[in-house]
Amino acid sequence: MNRFLTIVKYLVVFIAIQVFATFTVGFVWQLVEGDNARTALQTAVSDEVTTNGLAMLLISAVSSVLTILLFMSARWSPFSRDYIRTRPWTLLFWVAILACGTIIPSQWMLELLGLEAPPEMQQMFEKIMRQPAGYFVIGILVPIAEEMVFRGAILRTLLRIFNPRYHWLPIVLSALLFGAVHANMAQFFHATLLGLLLGWLYYHTNSIVPGIVLHWVNNTVAYVLTMLLPQSADCTLVELFGSEQRVWLALACSLCIFLPALFQIVSRFERRF
Image (cartoon, rainbow, N blue to C red; front, side):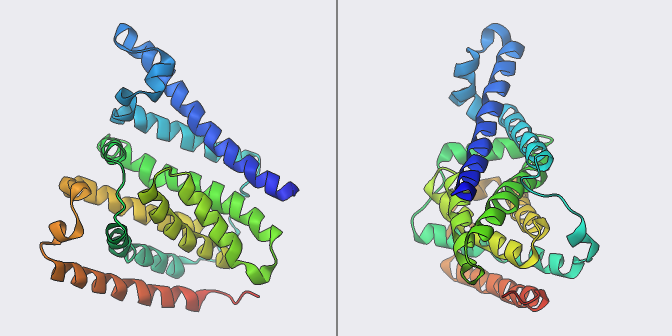
């Protein structure tokens, strides 16, 4: 029971940091804007801030840095160089390739299920990415912070609760929690699928490093698409590729990337019992 309460603590702290960052940035925003701004509370939760790229960038940056510092200093997500000392460069390469192979199939499944991120979320993401430091925050800080919380802290604790024979259960639970904090069905579905891969990688490596690499590649691809193809956020795959046949070809190519990468990764895992 104590360990379950520990997991609740991790989640509450993670969410509290997001709220704190939102209100803090809102307060500072009001001071900077002066008479043109609303009150700090109104600013923090208003459409003005949620659609302002710089404000959302600051919120993401502050919350990510605070999360990293707190979870590291409290050793809720232990920091160690042991895994890096094993020089897992080949495995990390294949993890990056694996991530590339998940992008189109994930989007295809979202469209198949009729799920779509809210327009305001898409606009917010685009506005953050278009800021000078947007990639650094979304591509690097956010993956590190989220991996420390959901794999380094939550999944690590769940794996200690359940019998090792049922290691898949902690992986599924941590993935569902990871999806739930994204707060909309489209992102819940995508983040849960991604969370299963991230949890599987953590279980077999006992390190968040492979997960950070996968998470980084996933966010980097989103950044590149946003920068090079701004219209891609509002397009279906058929509209993006030009025909349904090309979509099926893209899915086939994705599987030709995903499956060999998966095989290479599995072949490099130590057997776990």
